[in-house]
Structure formats: C-alpha cells, structure tokens
Image (tube, rainbow, N blue to C red; front, side, top):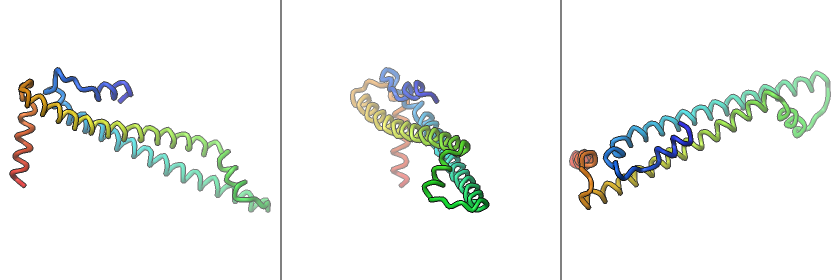
Length: 149
C-alpha cells in the first residue's frame, strides 16, 4: 500500500459512516497483515546481516592468521564495514527497518481510526443522523457477546 493510499484510508467520510464502518474491519486486517509481513522482512534482513557480518569477520580473521599480522578489534570492525556485501546487506536491513516502522505506525493509526469511528457512530446514533444499518448490527453483536460472557 502506498503512502497516498494509506493516507486516504485514514480519512473518515462522515457522509458515508455506514460504509466506513463496514469497510473498517477489512482495512484494519489488511494493515495488520502488512505490518506482520514488514516485520518478517525486517527480521529476515537482520538475520542475513548478522550472518554476513560473521562470515566476513571470519574471513578477515583467517586472512590475518595466515599472514601473521596483528590487528585491533577496531581495525577488524572497520574492514567489515568496508565490505561491499556487508554494506549492501546493511542498506537492505535499514530499508526493511524503516518499512516495518511505517507499517506499525499505520496499524496504530488504523486502530485509532477505529476508536474515532465508534465515537462518530455513537454520536450519529444519538442524534438520529444515520440509518443505523451497519452500526446497529455491530451494537447487537457486541451486546450478544456481553450476554454470552
């Protein structure tokens, strides 16, 4: 989902409150799925980066051992950070981390939208300005759940 689409789905059309209430659960589910996928990509990128780092470090230490050179930990770390594969994996991880943070922020915003929709629907029902088509069934479902508990 692009940033423009995300922004549009955060807007509430008060003229079509029933439609908003009907669409909201699927929009929230989609936002949750995107967040889960983004976190998974981020975690996989982090794992790949860790493996690359360990592999590059092992190669550097092996080279130093074969040549008999002495080196400090800072020098070894510097060599790791200059490695092109490590830099590529680092950039991939940072991009995935940013995407995951954005997806999680969007999910939080969608959750807040749900609370706002509920308050708007309550207000519309109290004023009698909605058909009560969607929200009425939601209210009945919530009441049924409370009775069952």
